[in-house]
Length: 166
Image 1: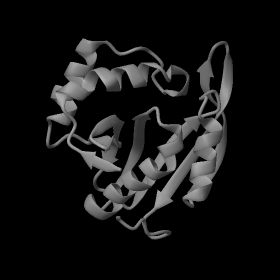
Image 2: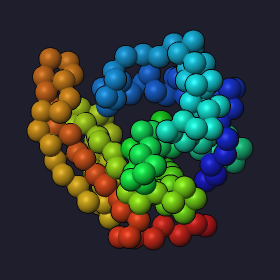
Image 3: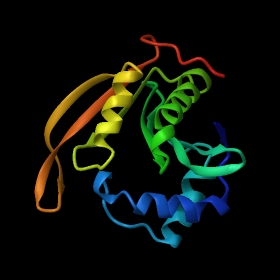
Image 4: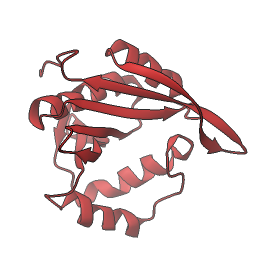
């Protein structure tokens, strides 16, 4: 597993992957090509943005995008962002991006929220447990398809566990 700079040519794949998982997103609307281009220009190409993203690759093939959004530099705390379709590689992807956050960006806490209506909900819970996250289950956090769903909030703290770099 490798993490490298995102390229504009990665955007069609990222858009496709993101738009396939609307139920699990905080903002459940499809992105257009123009919206992704704007994201690339305003976030990826902005060195002072409060976000950092990488292309996740394996064997020269881009699997998706991983990174952090809403980085609070003063508190060393961002939200994790993972846009990939490789269920079997999720734990490895998350451990790898945690490494980037803790060991390269000097982040202290990394969190995420996964909604129960997300088809990957159980997988995310297993990964959080496997990687030693502190977790909480929150009621009625996501409205989707006519009803409210719970959210699984999880947090990794740099002091709790080391994520060795291969």
